[in-house]
Image 1: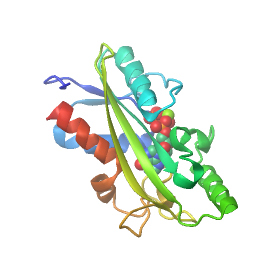
Image 2: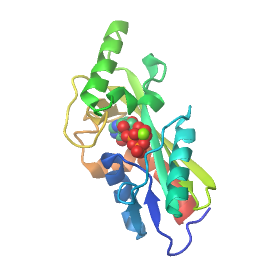
Image 3: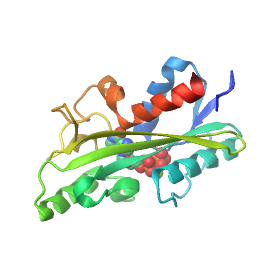
Image 4: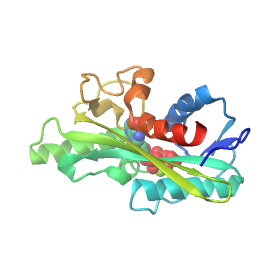
Length: 199
Ligand SMILES: O=c1nc[nH]c2c1ncn2[C@H]1C[C@H](O)[C@@H](COP(=O)(O)OP(=O)(O)OP(=O)(O)O)O1
Ligand SMILES: [Mg+2]
C-alpha cells in the first residue's frame, strides 16, 4: 500500500529510543509524524506470539484510536543458544522498571551456565503499517552478530551494549547512530517499508 500524499503518520511506540530511531529514518521523507504518547494513545497488551502479530496489534490500536495511518515496531534480541530468547519477550525481560542491565545480566548468567562464550545472536524488527481503517502490511529485517560481556557503550538503547554485529568490533552502543542506521534490523525493515509505502 502507499501512504496517501499529505497523510500524517502516528509512530505507535512508547519506547523513546525506538521512536528516536524511527523519526531519524523517516526524516528524509518529509512526512508529518506524531508520537503515540503525545496523542494520548494507550499502550496495548502484547498478546501476540510473533513479532508480526505484536507489531500488527500495536499499529491497529493506534490507527483506530487516532483515525490516522500508524506505524508500529515490534522487535527484540534472539540468542541462538537460548533457543531464540528473549525474542518477543525482550522488553518484558527488563521488568516493570525497564532496566536492561537486569535483562543483560540474565542473558549473561544463562550463557555462563551453558558455558557459551561469544553467543550468536540477532536483532529482529517487524514494522507494521495500518491504515486508519485497520488494514495492515508488515516488513521484517534482521541483523546478525554475537554478544560480548560486560556491556559497553552509552549510545542506543535496550540490548545495544552487548550486541556486536558481524564484521564489527564495537557494540551497537559504541558506534555512531548513523552507523547503526546503515545496518540495523530496524533500518532493513524500514528499507522495505519505505520502498513499498513511500516510494
Ligand atoms: O535496536 C535495538 N537495540 C537494542 N535493543 C533493542 C533494539 N530493538 C529492540 N530492542 C529490544 C529492547 C526493546 O525494549 C525490545 C523491544 O520490545 P517491544 O515490545 O518491541 O518495544 P517496547 O515495549 O520497548 O516499546 P513499544 O512496544 O511501545 O514499541 O527489544
Ligand atoms: Mg512493547
